[in-house]
Structure formats: C-alpha cells, structure tokens
Length: 496
Image (cartoon, rainbow, N blue to C red; front, side):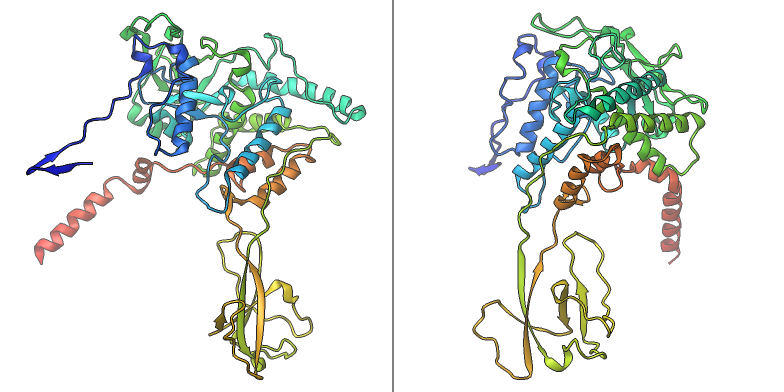
C-alpha cells in the first residue's frame, strides 16, 4: 500500500516476479509439481488449487495442446467440469467433495480412465491451454477437439460389441464390470489424432485471421537438460478454418490437410493419458450447445457428426439392466424452518366458509427452488387444502417472534403458527442438492444415462450455456447502427 512520508509518496517494494519455469534454464522441470507456488496466504484456496493443477501440466505437457505456446499465461483446463466451489454459506465443502466423488466413481465404473480411477483434477481430465484459448473453449464454446469421424465410427462399433458381452456377463453376475481391451492396438487405447473442430468461425478466426500453431512434431519436451533449442519461424504454421459445407469445419494446415494434434510426445504415465471418453463428452456438449443456439440450418456434415456422437454417448453410458452399482449420495442437512406467528381475525380465516375474504391468500410451499412466484388462488369449497402444505398470508398481518410474551390475547383473534421451509439453495448450476441426489440415484438404475450425467455436469437441460461474445452481438445487431444513431443525436443537439 502506498504511504506518505515527509511530503513524498513512498511505494512499497515490488513483490518478487514469478518466472516461467519453462523458460528458466536453471530450473529443474522435474520439481515443478512439488514446488511452492509462492502465493500469499491470503489468496483464495481455489486459485491455489488451480496453480497446483497448472504445475502438474507444466511438468508433463509443457505446451498448449492447441497452439503449442509455452508462454507464461498458460492455464490448466478441465475436460469435464463438475462443481468446484460455491458461494452459498449453506453448501459445505464436504458436500462439494462428495458430489465430485460420486461423478468420479461413476466415470471410473464406465472405464473413463482405462480401468484406473478417474479423478476430475487428475491429468487424464486436464489439458494445457493459453488463457485466451481457455476462454474460447469453456466460456464461448468456439471449438472442440475431435478424434476424426473414422475413429468415432470404430469406437461406436467396438462399444456395441463390448456392451453386448458385458450384458451377457451381468446376466449371471450382478457385480460384472465393464472390461475393455487395454493393448496399444485397441481402438480404446491407441494414440488419438485430434483435429480442431470450429463452431463459430467469425468469432474464432475473424476476417480469415490465421491461427498460429507450432508444428506438433517440433514440440520438444524438456526434462532436466535445459531449455530446448529455440523454434524456427518455419516451425510455426498459419492454420485456417475449412470453409466447406460438405466437410467438417476443422483447422487446416497451409498445405490444406487437417491439423492433427497428439498427446504421445508428453511425459504422462499410462494412467495419466488423456481420457478418450471425457473428450467425447466434451465434444458432444459443444455440438449440442451449437445445435440448440444456432439460428441457421446446420450443414449436412455437422448433422451427421451430431447424430454419430449422440449414438456414441448412448454406448459410453450403457449399463446392463440389473447391474449392482452403488454411488455415494451427497449428505443433505435437514432444511431449516422459519416459524411465523400471524394474528388474523377469525371471520377472515375460517376455511369452512365457502366465500373467503379476498384479503387472505393460500400459497403452496415447495422445497424446490423456483424463480417464479405461485399465483394466489382460493381452494374449492368442497375440498379444504392440507394445512401442512399451505402458508396463510394476510394482507397486513401482525407478526410476532416465536415464543414472544407480548402476543395479545383476544377472543376475536386466532394465532397461527406455520413452519415454512426455507428455499433450498442452488448447488450445481440450476440444480439443488436434492435434485442432484435424485439424479445420482437414477444413475444407478438407468440403462443408458447419458442425459442424466450431462444434467449433473451442465444443469437441467444437459447442455452447457455458453456466452455470446460481444463482437458477435454487434455483428448481428449491425456494426454501424450505433454510430449513425450517435451522429443523428449530435445533429439534433446542434440544431437545438
């Protein structure tokens, strides 16, 4: 903090600048993961956690998966993102961790990490991107990583075969688990060649702006032998988006062939390899969001890809009927109730009177969060409402604290006490904790649970809600309208 001393402003000494370990020749890259992040103790725990994830990937990946950049502004990006933290004081850290553990256990059962435990904060669910690329992927949904249509077709065919075999085993063994081939030639474990599928071309590459990508074959991984030799300008490729409605809109290299990215040049251990199934879920979510928000007819190529990916999602989330699977349920505290004592004239409150006063409204209570307010309505005379499900509200009620000794004693006044449960706070996206537990229970019995799993990740619609970049909004509204309106306003003011 700046101080004032002897008529001079005194600036505090600068804090030590955090260096980029990838560009420090004296730094042992093998120690990155264990190194202290050097942050102040006052920084939020979430920031410290993200720094820890970043160090994981600096240790093994070292380059942005998309561009190959090794700038200081690199970030760890989750492929599947479950609830990380909550601002609600009514949601505990233990509940958040229990929810994440349920997601992880279910993904592990479905072989999201080649038979190894799947961890949301593990390398199998993380990629390294620059800050800009991270925003374009997760905030705006501008692109996704795509394993190629032929690989999708092979995966779909192989899963149909293995799922049928799984169902046969589960018929005689209720504890049978998915068991996929683990040899390196298997379609489930062989190295994947990822292409970059672009959804909003004008946002991702405005005016045909090329995307600079470091040749994947030139991304030398540093171990303990100093910084790799500098890359040559020719090692960087200016990629553009294919503009062909009959083909997929992917990034193309200067020679016109699709840009292909691989994970086989990193230092990840076999159990840390990028989760193929997690990447498919991420791809499907981007496709579904684009389909639901697009105002134009989709190309035949994208329609075909959406259909094929949806089929694959059904097979990934297949579970044989009757299979015994128990997931931990997130503990839900008993809802706190608020006691309200209302004093109202008996003549205005009697539910036996068919012609009730307009001053009294009956509102049904619900433990489910809702942004809408239930319209007041009177019950039919022939059937009185259940008093336990009704909150009585007077136009100008007199309220007294529960247990108050100053409640007036009047023969013409009836005292009503009602325990109104407080609205349950939102837990994950637009779902309450009770709703999340209901979905978790459904995962254990549903044969194909793709939609349920996506609801737990993205909310009730099962589709992520990406933001619209301001540049796209301006394009759709017309770039020149604002300027012309301003000019007209100026002319009017000058005339006045």
